[in-house]
Length: 435
Ligand code: URA
Image (cartoon, rainbow, N blue to C red):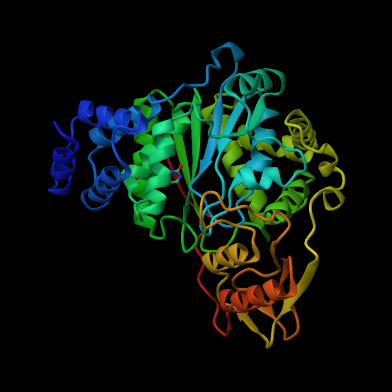
C-alpha cells in the first residue's frame, strides 16, 4: 500500500490499520517518507480524526520508534506529571522535587516554550550552568541517587514524534486531539512510568480553549495510559488567566523558589499541591486524599522540597545558590518598570495569550523551534481578574532588554488587562478530576 493511498483513505474518512500506521511512522522516522506527504497526512487527521484503535496504534508506533527509560531497578514507584501548557505554568519546578521527597521517583521530561506558552526547559536553563540534556544513562543514575531528574526529550525518546511534532508545528496541524494525545503519551510512556498525572489546561491561554475539547483530550490520554498499563489521572485546571504572577523564564524560577519557601501566589501553591496529591495517590504511597495532601504539604512547608530542589540544581550542573538568593544568581533585565492603571476599575480579564505574545516580543519566547530566548525578560502581574484597582496602581511590572521593547510590551499589557465596572465570572482553578 503506498503512502498516497493511506493519505487518501484518511482524507476520505476511512481508518488505517495498526500495521499501516506503524510502517508509516517507521518509514517517516527513517527519512523514507517526505515531509510533504506527512503534512498532508496530518491535515487529513486534523479534519477526519482517528478512532481509539488508530490513536493507540499511532502512539505505539511513535513510542517504539525509540528507546525507553529502564528504571525497574529503582524499586520505587515512578510517576511524572505532564501539563498541556500555558502561561506562567512553573508548577514542574516545585512539583518534581516535592514529590521526590515522598518516596516516588520522578523522571520528568519536559519541553521548550513555543508560541505563547512557556516551557520548563527554558525556565531551568535560566539558572546558570543548568543542564537539561542528560543521556538516558545519566538520568537513570541521577534518579537512583536523588529520586528526581528534569530533562528534555533526548534523540532516543520517540524520535518519530519529535520529527512529526516539529512538522505539525509548521503546518498548523498541532491542534488535533488524536495527534496531541499520541504525541504526549508516546513520550510519557517511554519514561517507563508506573503512573502519570495530567494537568490539562482549559481556557483562553490553553491549547484547548473549550471545556468539551479539554475533557476529550484528557479522556483520550487516560485511555492510552490505562491500555499500556500506566494508571493515569487528569486534573482540568484554569488557563483563562496566567498561573501565579511571574511570566518569563528567570522570573518564574524566582517565583518557584518563593513557593518552595512556603510563599508565592496562592493559585500556584494550590495547583501544585493538588497535582502532588494525585501523584502520591497514583504512585501508591498514600491510600487516601487526606493523607496524600498532608504529606505533600509537609514536604513543601518543612523545606524538604526546597532542599531537594537545591540538590537537583547542583546535580544537573546549575548554580545551587539560586535557592538562597535567586535575584543575585539569575539573569536580570536592565529595564524594569511598572504599568500603572490609568483609571480606577475592576480587572475584567488577564489575557494569557496576549501576555505570552508580549513575552515573545520582549525576546523571552519563541515563534520557531530554534529561536534563542532571553531568560531575563518577562512580566510580573500584580492583579487577577475581579481585582479592584485605583488610578495609578501597578497592574504589572515589565522586565525588558530595552526601553523600546518595554514600550511595546506596555501597549500589549494594556490590551491584556482591561478595566471595567462589572465583576467578571471566573472558571474554577481546578474544575474536574478525571480517572
Ligand atoms: N505537546 C506535545 O508534546 N505534543 C503535542 O502534539 C502537543 C503538545
